[in-house]
Structures are given as C-alpha cells and as structure tokens.
Length: 492
Image 1 (spheres, helix red, strand yellow):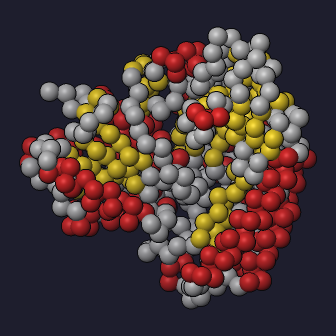
Image 2 (image 1 turned 180 degrees about the horizontal axis):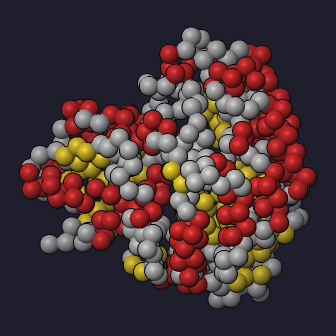
Image 3 (image 1 turned 90 degrees about the vertical axis):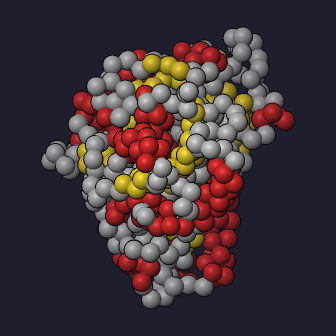
C-alpha cells in the first residue's frame, strides 16, 4: 500500500531547500505527497536559531500525539538543526517520535523510517560530519518558476550569537561545474529564476583555494541561456569584495538586490559578536554597491538587545539604519541559545528593555522603507508573477509578483496586454501606483504580459524534480501541499 508524506519546514532558506531534498528521497522510495487526510509520515525539518524553536517543535509534536494514537502505522520524523542539537532528548521528551536525524545525514530518512517500522522502536541517527553533499540527493522542487541552488554548506565564521556552525559544520563548497549543471537542468524545464544559496556565499571557493570564485560563478550564470534572474543569499560583510559588485553590475541576469546582514551598528557590539567588520566598513560597501547600481535594493538582518548593548550602542545602530536606507530589514530580539558564547556573557538585558528598543527600530525602519517605496510611484517594474505572496489577493482581485530588486508588488491582472490569463511564473510589466512600507501596488492596466513555460507548468500543477549531481533532465509530478515556511533568520 502506498504511503503518504507531509513535510513541515521551520527556519531559513537552507531548511526550505533541505525539505525539497527530503521530499525527493521519499518519492524515490515510493511515498506520495499527502493530499488531504492524515499523512502516513510527518517530517519536521527544524530550526534551532530562535528561542521559540523548541516550543514550536514540541507544541506540534504534542498535537500529533493523539492523531498518531488513532492512526496505527503513522510515523513521525524530526530532522534539521534542532534535531542535530537535541539528539536523543527529542525521543525522551516525545517518545511517540519514530525517527530523529541530523543536518549531516538527511539522506538517511527513508532507511531510518523503514528500520523504525521493522524494529518497532525509535531510530536516532546523528552524524558529526557531512555524510554526503545534499546536492547528490534528489529534490522535489516547491516551485515551477524559481529554484534554490546550493553552492556550499556549513560556515567557517565564529559569531558568538550563532549556533549554526556547530550544527551544520565547516564550509564545504561544490564545484562550479556541478552548480551550473543543476542551474542548466532547472532552466531546461522552464525555471526562470535561481537563488544561489550558502551560509556565506561570498566565501565560496575557500575549500578549493580559488579567489574570486563567487564573482566568476555569477558571471557564468549570465551565460546560461533562458535564465532570466539570479539572486544569492547571504553574503558576509567582512568577505564582500569589489569583484562581486562588478559581477552584479555587469551580468544582466543578476538582480540588483543585496541582502547584507548588519546585526549591529555599534563597533563595540560587533566586536563582542565576533563580527570581523565595523560600521564604517559596512556603509562603505553599500556606497560602492549604489555607485555601481543606483537602483539596488539592500536588505539586512539586525539583532536588538545583544548582551551588554547600551542605549548608546543602540543609538549607533539607529544611526547606521538611517544612513543605510534599507528597503527592508529582518529584525530580531536577541535570544539566548545554549552552546553559544553569547549565552554565557555578562550583561543579559531585561525583556522589557529589548522590546522597547526593538519597537523603536521597527518604527524607524518602516518609516525609511515607506519613504523609499514612495519614490517608486510612477516607475515601470518587471514582475515575475508569484503564488502565495498576497494574503488579501482574493478580496482585492489582485495578483502578486517580485520585481527584479526583490520588492513585493501587488498588481491587477487586467488590460489589453493580458494574453488569456496571468499565471504564477509568467512575466508582466506594470506601473507602481502606491508605495507602502512592505510592498508596492500597481493598480493600472498591465503594460505587457509574457506567458512562459513556468506559467504553463504552474497552471498544470506540476513542478520539477531534480535527481542530484548527475542530474540529467528533471521530471515532473503532482506537487505536495505544504505549509509556508517560517521566515526565521539563520542567514548570517
């Protein structure tokens, strides 16, 4: 009897892409995506970066305990960063869990599920180092028009607040030919946009000793016929070099969008964070980017309330935010993570102090983003039409898409230019009529509409499945209904 699966993903883009790999393996092992009803297998792909990660997992596991009790044969698996951290503690706290696997052995899931069924007991397998590079595993892609392509795993930085290096290990780089083969295979099936993914993308090449490897990779993506958009996340300010800026500016399909984590505007706090740059260096990078690409949209991550942060330190962060003019920012209240140096530092701040500073930062950033977005009113934007980006689209009769700079635009799919119907994966052009702090609106008639293979595949309910490093051509199949991943921040 065919068994069904559901994957629930928490955390960053790394986890989202890992879940695509997990889905690919399960389907290769004969599982099918759950289509309503109770799945035979529920997989939690977890995050350990935020303080509430534990509560989120165990709350979900608690809800499933009764479901499993009334569905004999149902299995629950827990993987990802929290599994790597908590290991056997998970089955102690939730003995109804069948499988626990770590970040280094996501390829073991089907075997562990079968072993747990056969032995009628929990299987816990946590490796200390990478068993196989995730790109060698099959992947059932979430989107027909946009795809993640991992260029490295792990991280060589030692930020005092971050637990990721201890859970994902040292940086391991893929060879450029393998990356470009995966990009080419996705594009061959109609995918228009790829996002190059790494914990610190601009240190790419360190493992095989090639300087400027990342900028060369960006330029090589420019030679992939049919690839319309290239994005990447996330770089580290300390390793960000001018050759990357040049490659972004000179490669037509590389989007003028940069996510550059600031974390703090205080040099004293940056030193305590063990971030090997200072505020002046950070701002100088932004100046160079905007000199080369005046239309660039720059986003960031900021942590509020790091141990020892004074009001003066916080004011310095606000000053940098005012100068940087970020188009948006992922702002986080510092949370103590066991196993990190910051968790043992003196000067842990009271919750009410952190909350008050956080509120001030969000208010300032919203003011800046709103002002920057209002400047775009009247401007023409090219949009890759997206699905699931507009919560009120049904009420407003709008659709949503991403501009080349990454901004979210809600638009009305109407006008003489519309060819039959607009689908996610199609390309449209519109004029911005309103700018809000977190999105733009384009309520006039569309200027152009180009139907694409990605739109055809989205309309048909299909999405690509890649087979790993050996690749060949992806195959297509019915997509799984999966909840949207949390937008949590382990991009550093």
